[in-house]
Each structure stands twice: as C-alpha cells, then as structure tokens.
Image (cartoon, rainbow, N blue to C red; front, side, top):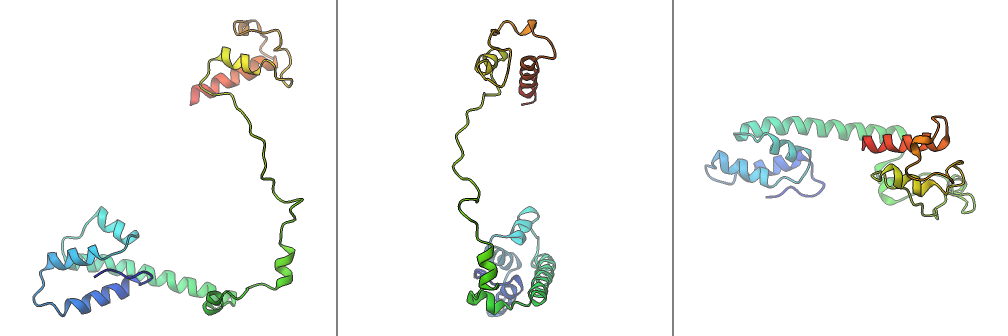
Length: 177
C-alpha cells in the first residue's frame, strides 16, 4: 500500500491503519516495514532513514509529530489565502488575480529589457604562472607600462605600478584557490 500523490501523511496513516484491521494478527516488524515502504520521498521518509524506528509505536509517535507540523503548515497557507482575499478555487481555475491593466503595465519593453546577448569573455586561467599571466595581459590597453615588460622583468617594476599591482593580485588569488 503506497501513499498517493497529494495525500497527507495523516490520511495515509489512517488508510493504512484501516487496512491493517483486515489482517489477522499482523507482526509488528512486517507492519512497520510495509508502512515505511509505502511512504513517498520527503522529509518524513528522510527522517526515518536517519533514525529508523524499532517498533510500530515509535513510528506512530514520529509520524504524529510530522502530521502536526503538516497540519500547521496547511493552516498557515490557508490563512495567507484568506488574508489575500483570493480563494483556492479561483487560483485553481486560472482566473487572473490582477486587473489586466495592471498586468499590462508590468510587461517589459524589449528595447529596454534585460540583455541576453552578452559577448563571450575569455579570462586568464587562475592556475597560470605569473609569467604566463603577464604575457596575456601585456597588450591590454588598460594596463599601461606593460608593453616593454617580459616575464622575467617583474622584479624591476615599482610597487605602485599598475602592472605590479595587477600581477600581485593575480598571484594572491591563485594562492587562495
């Protein structure tokens, strides 16, 4: 016997107990195995997997806690629906919840909307040596003073130069990865 989709834990346990009454003298371990096997994947099933109950009574105690939590969440969701003034029936029917004029105002203009055609950028791998990094960024117009540098000339740079700061930052980023 499996828990049906959309069926609450309380309904499943009640249906299982009703069927259990039809069986003559059921063994506790068999009943426990059957009810656990019929559960759908979820938080309760996961909890049972972490600490399996020894008896059907332990299962029912744990199930009662989850049933109470499930009932509380259902009541809380119902309260939110009641406060918003939108009935669950109206939501199921697919009736629009907003006035069409309000929805029209919220549409995004394709000319000013979010851009989706970003250019592909190529980044320097962070696991490259400082010499390789320097070779890749030396022709970058934003970094001045690198045109004359080679991979072995890092030591000759001043600490305030853009090239030195850039290379130092890249080396430090590589150390943290």
